[in-house]
Image (cartoon, rainbow, N blue to C red; front, side):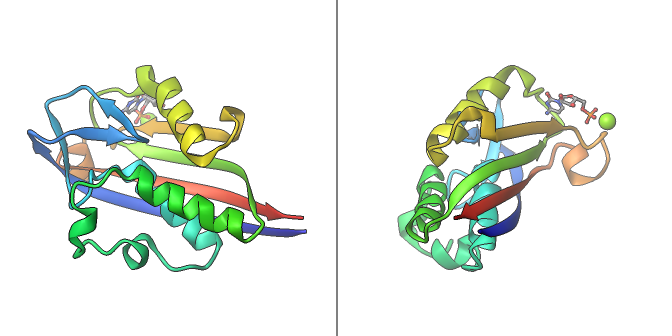
Length: 159
Ligand code: C5P
Ligand code: MG
């Protein structure tokens, strides 16, 4: 049996008048991500975790932010691509664990929806997908509401 672990991390600046999308779910608030794509840090972190487990580089290698094709792109394209690369190589995703660090708004009310969305994009049972939320205790750029971060770990298994 071949077991592979992957880690992903992402951050984006927050700006007024942009959409805040996490795990493919629109978060109702009056600011969002400044990014070339839709800036979905959770999907970007999970994408990098999958690519990392496969040792296939990182999201920018597969989807350069200089490429107009990915302008304002729905980040589900990225995570679906990474999951397909894993499947093509005979791996299944055992579990995904992720953390979003956002000072506000509180995201707990959207946990079920975000988890279901991520599970659907990865073609996984929800029971294998964990999404956690943290503030940055008002410290640093995340704590001051200038940016947000996401971290993800994935485990791939091939029999
Ligand atoms: O960062 P802190 O430990 O104070 O967060 C406490 C709890 O608040 C977290 O465990 C999480 O359940 C929730 N939370 C949230 N949305 C955020 C940040 C934290 O729902 N943006
Ligand atoms: Mg705390």
